[in-house]
Image (cartoon, rainbow, N blue to C red; front, top):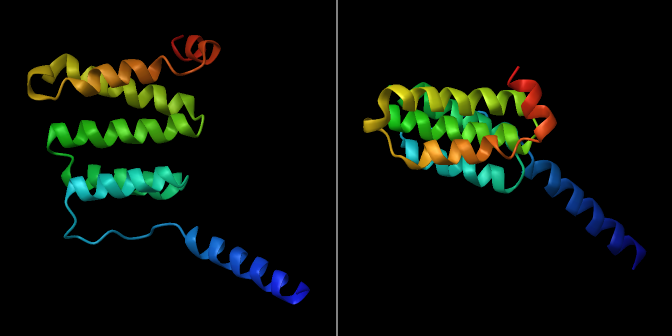
Length: 132
């Protein structure tokens, strides 16, 4: 019985290491929506490095489309916020808000509101420091 428990624990640990492997490549035939969904899936399991890779890939491949750029950048900001990288999150959300100042008519309105909400999720003391 003791051997069976040890074997089960070893199997669980092995599968954990295998499943935590960071994403290194995204097939060229994936659409921006598919890659963003991949990123969201990685966020769901706490693999922020792979999620960041997905969103950076979307920006690199499809970033000339302003609405795709804003969506991927917003998701990237949420990754930073989840990791308590408040400076990066704040800068990312502010970049999006600046884009809206110029191209509001061309972009979905939701991300402007979501960025404002996300900025307000940064702790007050840190937010005051970042606004200086």
